[in-house]
Image 1 (tube, protein in one colour):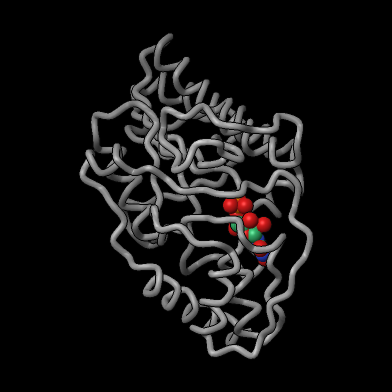
Image 2 (cartoon, rainbow, N blue to C red):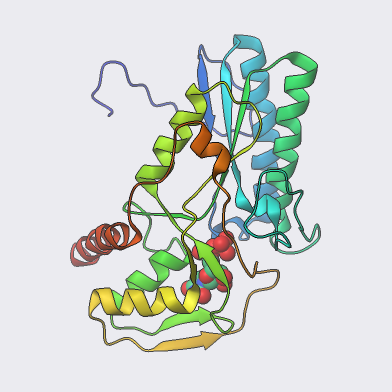
Length: 266
Ligand code: UDP
């Protein structure tokens, strides 16, 4: 993209205020992998809160529409299943995940306060687990961890007994969902994710089978506050004309192929 005449890359920190002429802003700043966002939790809170204030101030000045990448983590360890946007969530405010969960919740608060107080044109996407090519080898989230271990015939590490569930959305589906939401007139939070739900043990077995790996599955302690289940209700997203299209088998195949090439190139 760097060579494209209509593309410009500016490097900056969302924690600092900035001036730009824009008409649409996607605020995607913040690591989403627990390993990465917990490494410097204060920075994670600052990125979420100061970042939201800075993009909202910019939107307020320029009249731009602004979309916040929020998260299924606003639901915490949910007591409602599947999760609808109307659910207020069940988050431990002082736990190790709070820097991300509460940071994103405070960002949502800021988005709706700027909307009510200043008329800023906001969109909020609550993104569920997403995977696909271009993830880093050391991303630390479950799909990439399992695939990278399986391709190296190393043990796949399942935390807890592996009965906890997640619902995985392929990255291209997620991107089209974000764009559909940006272009829609809908201002309330919208879940974006794939409702197909898996236990982590099922996922580990599937990855071992698909890679033809000799890896064993081993079990380690569950990290604290790890949500037991997660599945989006995507009724609202569907009413806006979006739903995920990429089957998990095809998505995993594409991701396995990507990591295979990445490991070969090392
Ligand atoms: N997990 C696992 N092995 C790993 C990484 C993660 O069993 O190598 C589990 C983790 O405990 C959680 C689920 O997989 O229950 C999803 O974790 P991830 O870090 O991908 O994202 P989260 O949904 O927890 O933010």
